[in-house]
Length: 118
Image (tube, rainbow, N blue to C red; front, side, top):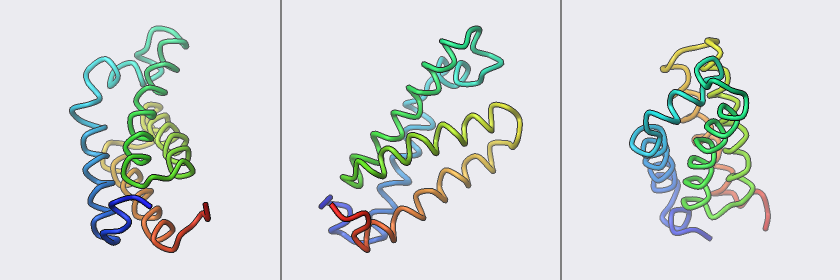
């Protein structure tokens, strides 16, 4: 069980939010911010690598905070999907951030209840 889970739901949520802030701002950098958007990447390969690398940073943060490989993989997929939609112009930064943080809000009660079972 992770340290954050042992400390309770508020600590877990705070850990997720801090990990998210680190991943979306200082750990993203200009290269990933630009090239994770398909229309700005220059090639499909660069786009896939940039979007995947950015999503892996977030997945790693979720794994470190939760200790759960399941939620790590869920974050990898959900973060990539949300950022893809934002990059395609389906919504802006506010909706993007709300959706990312909403994922973490959903993870917390599931983890606190012990789901998924190890």
